[in-house]
Length: 419
Image (cartoon, rainbow, N blue to C red; front, side, top):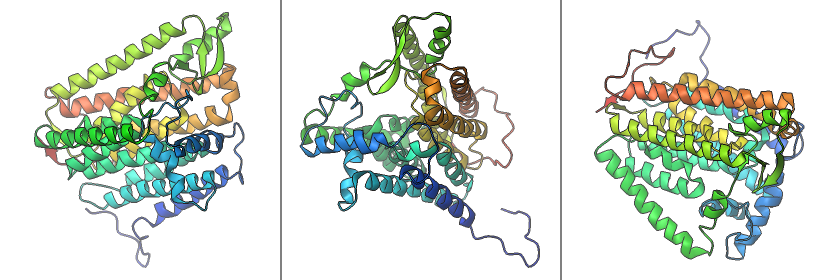
């Protein structure tokens, strides 16, 4: 690879020095926020850790899942994340939790930076992670979603050479929060698919049975998740934000752990949202059946597209969900020729808008104030646009007969194609 020569007498910075410095500064700022030294205003996002997670922690220590708490809506593996502060027994619970999230953040950054030195890879993926995480504000450190994202990123990067490792990590991630199972959707046909999917099935079966035997109530979350309603930050909720200004008789309440719309037509819109998710699943199945051209970056592209589609059509779009998209976008951009630059940029912008709607102006969102609704329209519109662009790119690159003459984004070079 060639590039411009540095001016005589000026030494280039060592690889990774600048992104490491920016990572350290931005993460220090996040830690200052969650420890209360700095304040962005808006809601206190640390309550989930200091109160809710801590309460679950105490319950789990008694040898059972939180069976009587409808806000426990997570797969059984989530118990590992909630119990993880026990690894630092001399620390207060919240402090230990933030330290472990920071460790996972550093792990993702290190993996992306290391991967950037491989042939056909670049450091741009590490930069997407460095920039994208702090755009979400302190919320990203006050939830366990970054831990789950670390597992998914590791699975995709390892899967380039080791499909079985991808399968094991995908299954483990799915038992933490379901969505990492989608990293399996783009594995190359033939032996890699058999290796990855069989490893995932065996891991899921073994760990799933282990969790069921470990403590009672491992799968109680299924009923709690089924009964969730329409969260006020979702795509479908935009209809009710507008309807409140023309006489809609419903209300906003804390329901199943999040602020939801309750009242006339909510069930109908929730059903339509499920229908959109079913259409997204159908599109992915059709794509999988028709795709024939697989490159090294295809699993990352497919995972990014799938998570975008299901996040956008979900009845719930919590702010921390965007960190999933930032992580997957970073892996896509890490590949030269991996495409997805435009959807990745849209996700980064959506992350910046997300921190405005939560926690800064969440009161305006709850009240369906014009400013709060405008922020939601922009954020959700960006996610819809990113979903459509990602799906279009994935289809064109992998399906025979699709228009594939799309010019690569600036700086992209074709990566190795595997058929």
